[in-house]
Length: 262
Image (cartoon, rainbow, N blue to C red; front, side):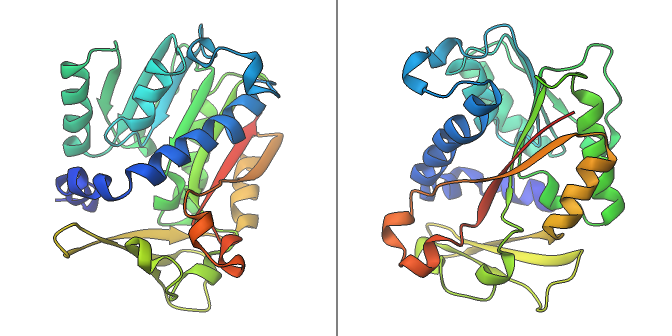
């Protein structure tokens, strides 16, 4: 069993702990990443349920289909495909599709093995994909494959949510987020390719742990540039936890957004 399938086996109970934070993350994804990419400055001027009408979107590392379903159901996406390496995660996503059909297609596949599509996508979305790259070569290949999936114009965007590599050294081996049921461990000083141990407390008190990998912001930026992206921006993601954190901790959010186009 891969660590992705292990996560899937405990997903239902874990997600209950973080439902509020996940919803907040989605809202900031829409307002901080999606709408700016579409050139929309005021959310009050648009009907969000139609904002992606006509768009073809691929959701990489889609997991249980959380974002995949949001893209279709709440943002009006014309066509959306969800891809994940974990059969167990795709089973969860397909069960949701069976119970509440939206016309979403799910594929079990390793992003690293995806081939260039005949018809490219208008939008590539990936929440927590790049932080699973174990080597620089894997990171660069992931970004290259993202580029291959994406249309060749500056209106075709990659929008990602990632572990916040811009402040990782400030959030590992601390208790900043422990009271919210999760924390991070790593050997310091951080070097490119370092393992980050993510720990999440289940409702029964057991601990779900999984490994992600650290690469510096500069390495990420170089990977996108190498893959032909002309625009790249780190986008801070607000957290529902802000009001419960002290002022020094508020600036060290565990996740960050990425917006890029060719």
